[in-house]
Length: 297
Image 1 (cartoon, rainbow, N blue to C red):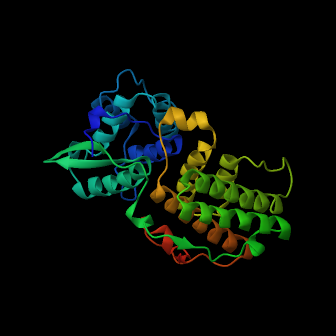
Image 2: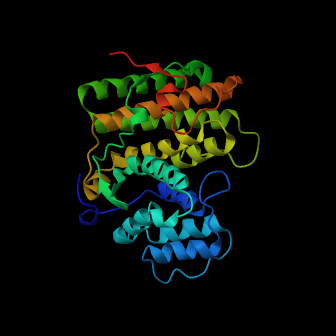
């Protein structure tokens, strides 16, 4: 681990959107902040000239976070303040819940909130997004010939999954992630086309397809969040992006990407066939438990 104030902090926009939920809070277990309390929160985090909340709380917070997403120090101070016990003087149970969800989000980016005494700090972890709930590889149980309407296209996408598996076993991590992202894109595009009922036809843009799957309820929200992270890593197909980020994915990252795709495909099969979803489980459940079995060598 490294000391927080010596590292660069940068967060994906989808992570920022989820942070906006934690900052605004709700009436079901998270600290609800009024517009005045939201401004006070950012001021306590050392953010100056944030102005007044204009419009909806969550959208305003999300926009503010996006405006400062390149300000590493500001992001670090905001994350530390979100975990600060002084924000939760009347209910430490709420603080613990917030920090648990916060660390689940930060694990995707390679950070973690830790405590020294009563004071929180931000530390860096290996940037593999290795969340304990996603450590076990999974084997695909959904049938692509059921999900994908065109048999030939389905066989092509299955071949991509097989190639991703070969790349993974061979240590070609970037190649495996690119293949996994492309397979997910193809399946989502086919499902979107099959369910299109009018208006502008769906695009094969992966980010748009993931958002559509989330809005339509085809894929569970926890999988949607990780699918966006997979999309970002899939963009490492562009050499300049990898060079500027200075990041090379490792085996653990491929394992998580595999689990994301498997969980998404299992959800899509249920959506296409009308099979009821399994009983609700806590948000911290393992993605490998969502209709998957362990992947064998």
